[in-house]
Image (tube, rainbow, N blue to C red):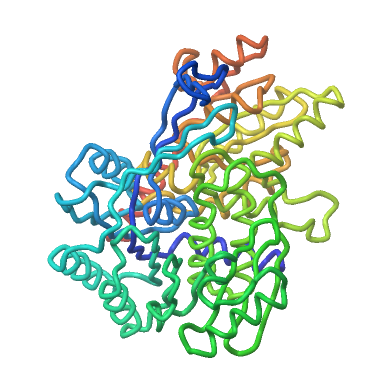
Length: 490
């Protein structure tokens, strides 16, 4: 994809709103270690050290959409239990995600509990009910979905076969969306794809396609034959088949077929990678890409996701870092994902160079920002800038911020001579980024103190420096936004 087209596409994510309906669940990762075999039975003894909960299933699709810079409206069903309360709380934390979760006291909230030792899953335990929803609960779910369809640019059905997407719910959801001319993406689990008739595209993995068409689907040619059998039945317009180490295939009813090699460099965890594919596909199509360019972006997003641990999400900048060419310049664009910026920093250190780090939202770049960055660059040989993602700014500053999306903000920063690398982080603080980069100098504005600077203790402990940059008085993004709002209102 051409650089200018990629910039436009990713910037369009910022204005998109996607409706997601399906099986929501809680992904619980229990981390620990295995050092001995039980004397009671030939099984490992797992020593628990910590646990972490994340939204899973359809909720993870919505979370990926939000972390890619767009807005999501989520519909699903939870039980009247602690796991349901936990999931609601996590989803509420994101202002860009509106969750409409119907409570069904007759069933538990779906929980997938993964036990991880030394970075590897050793066991998974599921707590769930896979029975179809009662007619009353299904009716409430469909009614809520139907009221919101008009607000959405695109609709996603995330089917994990946990009962939320019964035949009746699927039929009602697809019909409601198509009546309003919405694109419909289905991530399937049902072996009979006729259930999804009327969808724009369906995203099975290789095994799901094989089960649906009844043919072997190992090679490129077999994938095309199997996909066309379903397309000829006029179930959907396109199939996007995820194939693990063999990448991704896109097959259309018009006879088109494209095979994309895997974009993964190193696989740590495949949990939720399919959700990332669906989210990136959805936003690519909403952003104006054709199915093949949208699939190329989704393929890269999946490669980033499997390189992370847990049910991971991906940012625009991480996609950008993998897709951006040099664009005819002697240096690349300077926007990096975490893995690539770590490689870059290692190379600089091998040359004996010192690394400075600063961070911020950098929304509506003004002279105060320029002064801070120039002061930071003078403290070391190279300057890495951590940039808050759209989703983190939304959480920190409210649903009307940022003014500009993360790719627009990163592109402006990368054009500055004082900046050597830009890396977007989706957490509310840059602590994890600082831990990974281990900068020699940490720079923040003089309105901070040593004890209020995130990561200052880590840098000082390693023998580094913390520098408070002088402030250029009279410049503030928040005040600029307020002034603009006042002017537009008069």
